[in-house]
Amino acid sequence: MKKQKENQFLSISSLKVKMTTFYAEQNKNNRKTWLLMTIFFCLIVGLGYLFSDIYGNPNILYFCIIFSLIMNFASYWYSDKIALSLAKAHPATREKYFDFYNLVENLSITAGLPMPKIYVIEDFAPNAFATGRDKKHAVIAVTTGLLAIMNKTELEGVVAHEMSHIGNKDILLATVVIVLVGFVSILSDMMLRISFFRSRGDRDNGSGLIVILSLILAILAPLSSSLIQLAISRKREYLADAGAALLTRYPEGLASALEKLRDYGKPMQAKSTAIAHLYISDPKGEIRNRKIKNIFATHPPIEDRIKRLRGVL
Image 1 (cartoon, helix red, strand yellow):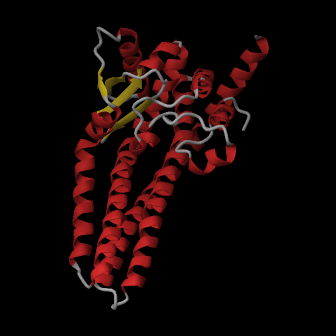
Image 2: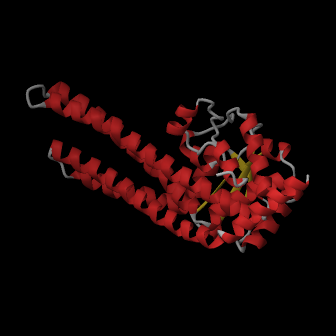
Image 3: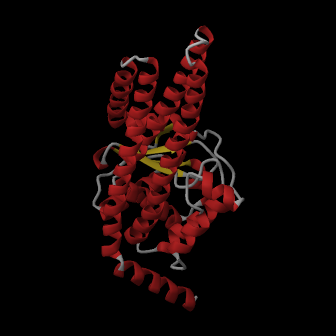
């Protein structure tokens, strides 16, 4: 017990010393994320330009630009509704979830953030996420499974993690990624279908090359967008973990919560790949194969996150 307290004291002291570095890293990651988002948008426009050049129809490029702007606008104003609808979440009343409501309210005051709306997802798998367009319109959603298995300090660590996402302005960016990833996938699939049907009626005008190029772009475009989605999510999770430790001054709370998430390991019943990167842990469950996990998982390995919180890394 004494050794555990000493380790906890050293961990908290280390966090205090690195507080300035933490905020510097937050700004650095924000710049990196905006750079990734710019590359992502250029991918959409580039895809539209290539197909407009192939078919000699500039309207394709105009469509890509206009539609992507419309989708970005819609995602800004309706980001929370999109995510909550996909998660099948419903509002949590103070009367029914009194302790949880008070915990979120107290952490909001500590973090200097407006009280977010609270939603609950009827699912046995423990998980949580934050969404919204800004800190004044933020939402925190948790599963009933999370509320069932977490003690007070563990739940506090999870909520603090989501509060950090709100304070770090992750929530809007993460939701915009949802829209852009979906749009790129739809666009590439649409271009592939157009190429296929056009090639059937025009076999003597380089149609084979067009189909091959369309197929390559249709495969690479969503793959590239997914990799950008994963890169943003992984960086943000580490930063939100550190923010939660600073907010609660008790890193062990979140570390213990992550252990329970890891040990549960089962996928959510109502999981959606479109919002997988929003959750505190992968809604598809913990992948045991380390290589597969590092390449395809929407989150960094839970073991690494626990070690960082406990000052091992």
